[in-house]
Length: 573
Ligand code: ATP
Ligand code: MG
Image (tube, rainbow, N blue to C red):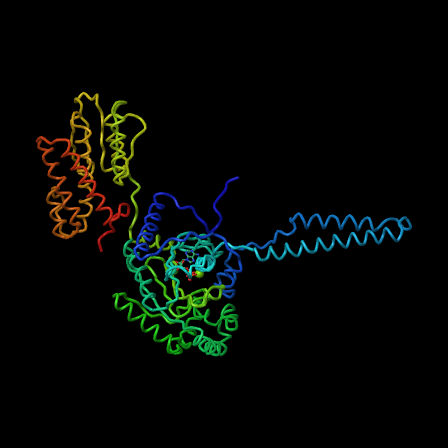
């Protein structure tokens, strides 16, 4: 028998998983700078939690949840014992006629009653507990965050409480591109007594800072206000009235929603309903004074941050708990599944779930699967090739190869070290075949007398280091190669750059373009000074070499902080 992943779920394999890690890591870093801490939540919760918060009339709860449906009462031992005893007594109560006196019958009856009662009590207890404990795989995480907020009394923490989460969600939907049954979200929630629109704007700012960090291009922010409990009911009634007039032109889902939840109709994607929906009243015209002012201030706060947005009056979102601010972000290259993030304000939710009424909330959830798809469409990928191939020629050089490899790994480079000795030709051949840009060959018994060589495949350059000076020279040269490779990659962003400038020219050009942080360029220059002396066979002592290695290492780390170690620079726009 051959097993396959269940429909709608998938494996995420290397090298793609490296892009996932990079994206999630960037979110952690950016959110942390806004004061958010990670909350790790359970993957399943009481079904009731989602019914109550997300809403029974939403698609998510109505038809997409993976819920436990079979209360396990029948396996409860107390229930089984009671049941068996009653059965036994029933048989005993039915002996052949005339073989049992009234007294024994009474005894059996009393006994049976006792057991029936016990059985009933245990059964009732089991059923109630089973129903209360029915669980669902989480279709989203805001409900869980709010549950945790209340459960741990976070309203007593310094406010606002800022939390983020990363993890899988589950919805039984029709699988298609960008829509899966197990999918992933990165989300954040801000909870506290204030509902200042500045908080809404800051949440959106953080989201966009994250998108900028991972260089997502072409994202569009849509915003709307859906009112609050003062003004929304009147709008909903007006909407219901208008919808009733066009009832027979609507599909079955929308018809049902006229009664249950007319706002949901605005969310409809049925092409034939679009012209009808276009003529419905807009909520913006029905907002109460407080909601209108909140929305206006949100727009001012976004403008203050130079955040561009489009207003979309139909943005009601697929969950019932939202009020006032709602927003959505779309990204290019995703077809009809183009929403990469949804969010909004949910001021009543904490109270609805039994927490303090004064707590307000706002948050968002990013669909990681779609975000990754969009990045891949933009040509972002993570390289799966190692940076350095560290070949060794014989047993005596293995130790040095290993120690050099661990220094480089410490600097964040991907180093491949073969399990067996290779001769130089094999080593370079392998590195070439696998497209590994830097090959280092270390050997002590070579006829060419105690040297090891470092080869930059992309640059067609080769250095040789004398064993007497190894490992310091070896390290130096590897670092020189790495710096050069990184700088060349950066220089590809400069439109008029020469094809093959020398290392020092390369450095000057990047400095002119302000592309190197000051400390990075300072450290590169310090290291280069020693590189040059080594290249000209000038005397360099071990301390100087070690300092140069440290400077180069520092520069590489700085570059990786500024430009990302794994995500290569996207093609120039
Ligand atoms: P859609 O309208 O696309 O179904 P939604 O309104 O149901 O999205 P939310 O519940 O707001 O989505 O979830 C936030 C984000 O999670 C969405 O913008 C989307 O990027 C992502 N998402 C939602 N459902 C799925 C899914 N089944 N597969 C992949 N990503 C999803
Ligand atoms: Mg959906």
